[in-house]
Image 1: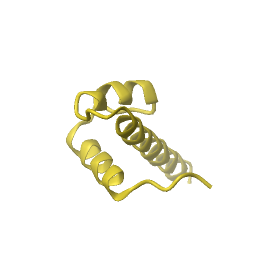
Image 2: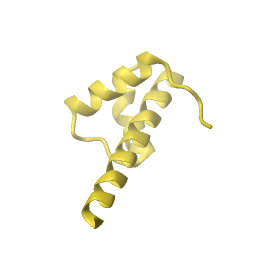
Image 3: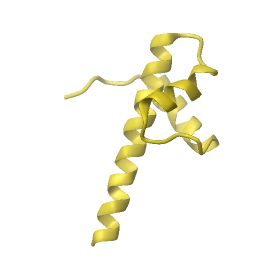
Length: 68
C-alpha cells in the first residue's frame, strides 16, 4: 500500500494536468515544471509524483484498450 495523498495534492495535480499538456511519465521533468508553481520542496515532489503516477496509469489503460 502506498501513502495517502491529501486532497490539496490531488486537486492541484489534476488541475495542472488539465491546464498544461507538458507533463509526461518522467518524474524529473514533472518536478521541474511544478517547481515554478510551488515554493515548498516537499509539496512540489508530492504533486510531481502524483502527476507521474496518474499519467502512467492513463497510458496503461490506453494500451489495454488498444489491445482488446
